[in-house]
Image: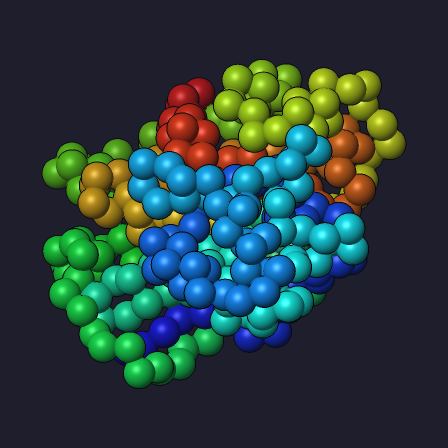
Length: 317
Ligand code: SF4
């Protein structure tokens, strides 16, 4: 199968014990049934500890979190005891894969590394965004959606990514990207394009955006605290870095709209994503662009209710 990946996919390495937003703290990890079965045979103390960490649920099981939010398998050195004692192969599927993501699109697969990981965000901002094709032995599959529709969304996505990165300013890039997404939606809906005379889509100001972000389901108390504490010294970020993060967010999410024939919603999502990161930096609520992207990703990309809340199209002026 053909595989598309961002340039940093192969370079990504977990920062493990030196990670300050460790994904083994505060997140409940679902354990797949195969791993639950496999863990029954792990010998010794580590096997006992792994089994004791499992909390059965309706689907399979999840890993118990201690009172301080740490995974029951996380040692004091912030390393996973199971991985240390039994090797990476012993991990459950989510722990082996996270923060990587995969989109199975029939004849091709698209892989990436989620920005919920600060190390991934740091890599993203190191060089201009580029994607690399390769091939692996996974078999091609039936496309999950009508091929012509997938093609349409893939082409529109490429034009949105280009528009966003070519903007003279972040605002200009976002407005052009949203205008193209609105045109694509009109084509999908069989409406005549309204052309240059159409009103521009207005981006929210920081006050409106802050209210929107505070209305999301908080993933942890730290998110709310960062948004509500008094603003500190702003942290500068080049527009090009935010544009690249927006393009990468389109890469991850935009094709999801194909099934619902929603060509505008995920463009609005990508715009809000980067504006939220910029807001955190303007308020001094994150200490670097990579941390801001990581915090926004953790808050919005792993809770469907928040993804949907961020997909609301912006109003025209
Ligand atoms: S957030 Fe990234 S660097 Fe940190 S522990 Fe998770 S995978 Fe590793």
